[in-house]
Length: 529
Image (cartoon, rainbow, N blue to C red; front, side):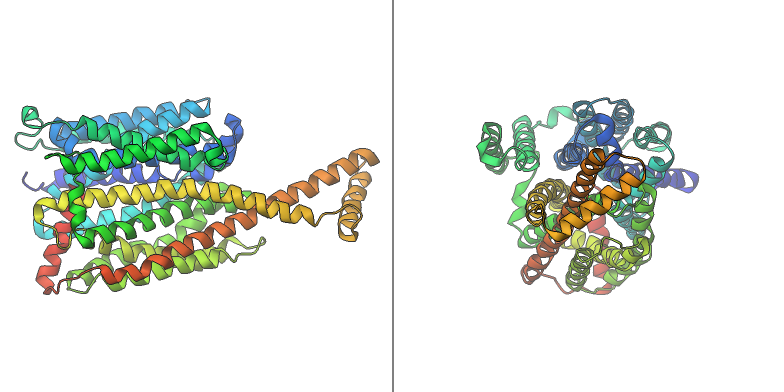
């Protein structure tokens, strides 16, 4: 496909970047609405987190299959169909009246959205000449970080002024316009989608992937609530997940044309890069999940204040990504960026784990700036390392596995964080309640002060005493959750610190500036396809 020119090129850039950013925003836009959604649908915060997990796990399933599906149906057809699925699912999410409904439609939204990210990038890269593709890589690199962070800001504004269904309904006009522009301006590649007879669909591999990942995700998400192996459902699904994933790996390695080419993991660079990418996904999505809940549930921020707190320091990414790309194109090793990036992100988590309950909005600026710097420094270097040492024919498989791993890290991270928060909440509440003994001076004084205040407002002594106990109970709850969220940031810190020594297993071939620039462009192209 020849590169686009003039207005057509501009429209392709706007369409593809907008579609991809829309998908990325939807990974996190619901985070600031969780409290309102849980109240509206009559479920707990822990249950409503399934709307995040369902979207992420759908992405995990579809991303490694996008190359195959685009080849089978034709890239333009698959892209437009995915956009239509995403738009319709967004409408149905906004119309949902139960947890089951919204989780189902969020899953379908994730199926459509997963294709938008990879396919948008492929179409965008085809619109540029090869020597200009690092520019496209920069656009998408910024989107990978900015998209999930813009979500809480936009979602926060909507939650402050409207109702939660609008966070899904705003996708509809964007989806319709993007679909029309894609239909009009995106060219069909010669022969695409017409060679179905020559493509064998790996139904078995796809089914095993879905069964294994979905079962594992349920175990991680609901294990704590159902007392792990004490639940027959958890036991059955744990066995199903193990058998499904082991069978998937064995089957994909045993057939000639698998849906997911796992053989590329024989490359040591890619194998260790996927570990780093998993941890990046874990940290990125878990932090964007935990921070808004901490800010609103404990610190009293409004949804919009929460979003703005996240957005301001993350704009540093816009400055950093092109600088890092340019530096790497001159031949600098990506490994120092990965090490420093992981240290910065660990620093962000450690500082966040030490915040006081009366912290202000701007007190988070420095920690979140460290987060932005850290993520900026690891995105392009990890893309580069994912293809270092691979044959050109394996670039697409390597990058699709890397992308899948990032989404998988995010999905698992949210599930693990939910379980960890629930466990730590119980532990901290037990510790706090053990210190609230009837007759102790502190407890008695606190109860009497609240009771007298309520009596002064006109309540009778019995009602005032009951309400005083309720106030103290709410305070204990709030403190227990506060300590649990801080513990979760410490957990993320440990993950980031533990993997840093693994950089010793990454190999970097010395390159001239010209060779490095070409390698970065090839990595970006592989990421697109």
